[in-house]
Image (cartoon, rainbow, N blue to C red; front, side, top):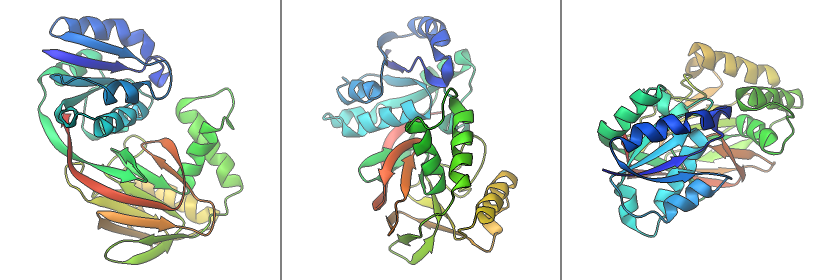
Length: 290
């Protein structure tokens, strides 16, 4: 078996400690073409120019997964999109791996990567950037932006996002977001667009999302006060948010989002930019192994 391997050695703050073991397990059963990333964009460029192989394995977190799926979708050779994609979860949260119940034990993950079954999945695309789990518009994206801009010093991972979120909450005054789908038009102050069920680990903000179907599960918070947002977050943690009077849930394959204010966006936990934005579902996009 010919395997192409992408490893992010800084994923989760300690992925580099697993590289030797991972390499040893794979070379026992496959010829490995390896890319160890050194900076953002390396995984994307490696995959974009990849030659066809039997498996593409990505060892890292959700950000590395996002680079890889964008490289696959942007590759000049359309055959790259048909390569079975497998995950070795080494990141901080590993949202996609948890969604698909991919084991975090390296030996078990390698066994699944080599012998698991490929399933056709859908992707989302926001302003040309593909995503595999979710897109966030508003509060969570602004928190991600704070981490990206280095506003949170000397901490990383989940803690950095929590601290950044608290900083955003302190000055929370969200602009109104206008959401238009082929079926309806609504407004809100935070929008979560789910391609997969899981969010931030084991939380289900969009519990009806199905990664195998080209339809998003969308959750819109209508309330704009700090206490509305805190109640929304508490509802997510308890699984009750979808029943709140100011939360609207809908399913669609296409959205247009605009705002008169400055509203941040993120995909798969990586900062993207500000609105306006157009989001579409891309069905039958890739083969994911689980």
